Image (cartoon, rainbow, N blue to C red):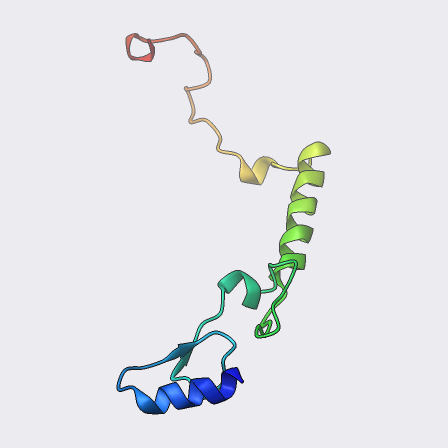
Length: 97
C-alpha cells in the first residue's frame, strides 16, 4: 500500500519526495544513522544495516576498561612526560589560587 501511494504522490507533485520505508519510487530515502550502522537494538523492517559497529564499539569499550582495571593503560607511550627541570616543584604559584 505504501509503495503505491509513494509512487502516486511522487508523480503528482513537482517537489522531491523523501521516503522512510515507503519504496524506491520516492526521490530520496532517509535512514537513521544508528540503525544503518548496527547500533540500534531493534531494527525496523525498512532498515538495511550497512555495518555492525555496535559489536565493535562494545568490544573496544570492554578492552579499554580491562586495560584500565589491570593498569596496562596508559602505558609510558601514552603519557605526557615532564620537561627537564619541571619535576622538582609542586608548590602553588600566585596564579594557582
